[in-house]
Amino acid sequence: MSDDVLKTKNNYRWISLHISNIEPDIELPAPIYFFINGKFIEFKQKGDILPSEKYEQLILRKLPYFFIAANSIDVFDQWIEKIRINNLESIAVNAGLENKELITLKQVIKGHIARVFSGDMSDKAISSVTWETRSFVKIIGESPVADVSFVKMSESSRNIVEHSVNVAILSVYLAHHLGYKQLKILESIFLGGLFHDIGKTTLDVQYYEEHNLDVLKQKLKEHPIIGRQALQSNIQIGEEVLRIIEEHHEHNDGSGYPYEKRGAQLYDLSKLVSIADAFDNYVKNCPGNLTEKSLFAIQQLEKDNGNIFDPQKLLKAIRALRLGIK
Ligand SMILES: [Fe+2]
Ligand SMILES: [Fe+2]
Image 1 (cartoon, rainbow, N blue to C red):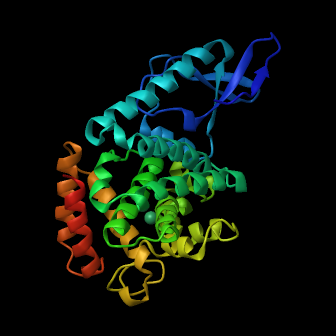
Image 2: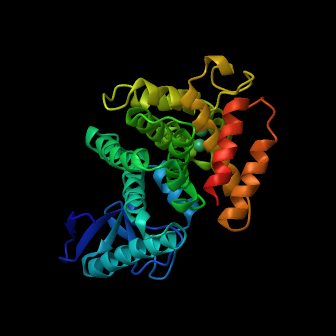
Image 3: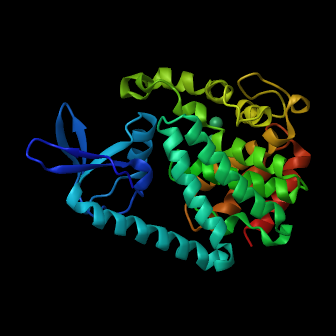
């Protein structure tokens, strides 16, 4: 948690808390405040939740810092630790504790991505992501294919941070099953998955104001281009990753965007990320448990007849997805 301490006139101490420390949809252990026009305004009371939708809005609108009263820091620390352990335990029920390292890394990556998406595009923030990606991918790359199952590490995504992490894990899982073994390739596809929608987060915050919905829709169509631009000057992000970001909404038949490229013009890894992206979106929009949601998503993918996805890649991906939900 942040150590930034602010003292007000009456010597009351406040501590800033970044949104990456807050788990949406879980009751808060103490009130959280915004600092507006020189005043601390209570935003949520003890026992309230920060809904996922609101969590995403705050990230997109670049409002990631809250304050808590200094005397509630212990209770927040315990809350964060308890959530960390609960997450580990609940995933371990499906995954087994042998996947503890991957699950822990996934949680760490989620925190780093929340920071980047909420406006910290510094080299340090990006290298935190690339560093943990390397560790994650190394474990996947060195495991026998049969031992890696995305479902063991997945949960249904509730916001852009979880969606991005899910797409990264799914994409690297598909690449691994389809025979991509080089760590560098696996790293690129993982980073491409993490950052594929970063263009949505670097849009000017004014577009997220309610009265701008029509303009927002139009602007969102540009997110693959905006996303590439946001990362292209960063030396830690290679051209492979930039192509994935730029091409993840292109379709096999040329009906996608932004450039209406056709299958043969598309980078292989972009094709896999676009399958993973669609899969996670179908999962998100289906009721039921994760297996039921995943089966529904597979059925939806199977309906494609070469319009959106590369048919050969889709066939192999579906086979891998079926194995992954067992
Ligand atoms: Fe997208
Ligand atoms: Fe996406």
